[in-house]
Length: 362
Image 1 (spheres, rainbow, N blue to C red):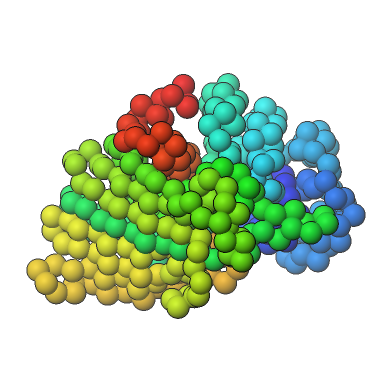
Image 2 (image 1 turned 45 degrees about the horizontal axis):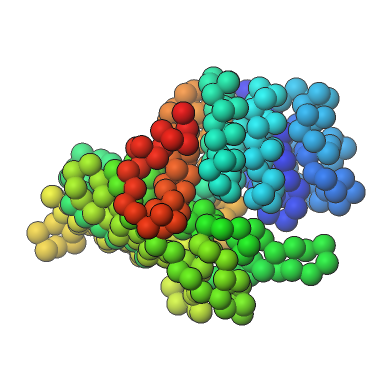
């Protein structure tokens, strides 16, 4: 039986995710929330598929109103980043399992508020929505890193990623995205595409040493706000293995395709072999030879299918318990790692990730 769900956000991005929720077998959207009721009504009317009948007439201005008039057990949040903290807390306080698109918080204070609300209702599932970990290429990389016959203990690795998107839209009624004016949003909204895949496969590192790029380039939507242009980090794992990360928003071209630059270029060295991945091309090496070679779908067009896979996993976790702990802890762990990078860069210090996690979650 599908889980009755409230969907928050009917703008262009949110509407696409609502369409995926309708396609998801485990979720049943029963109501929507948006501050622009008239526009949202027209948008929802354009959707297709079973379960859309009458949905356009069940759009409300708040989650509370939607929940009062419709029974729901879960809530999906796809709105502008600065609004996430209030919406997540509202959803949790209403007793609903909650998935909020990344980043669920812009700073440590907001994250602590969310953790307090979640701590009061520990039986609810709380997930930070990401999409890069769900495509077949990312899933294969994760499988290789977690399986017994993979590369064995990781001895080191690296990831390079870049992103180029118009985020400084501006203009009347069309403000720039938070990525351009909120401190530290590179690690939270760009690097998160790569960091989430790393946490999903390898968990949190023990230490982080990070730096941010300081750059102002309006033609690239780099406004000069601290921590929005790019960053670099060195992660150290329990066994002492180092992993380096370099990412930037200053991509000037798209030579490898959208997916490869967002998903990242990866190398992992292990005691039994090595992995190399460029977008959807993955290779495993042993003793100087390629022993496994795959070309898989990286990010799907519009990222919609990636989110549908994620929503199916969310519904499955709620219904059967499959991967429930991993899904919650790894996505919240991604937020912790993103902010750990910012904290290290701000303080110009090597950060103990476990100590930092306790500080902002307990």
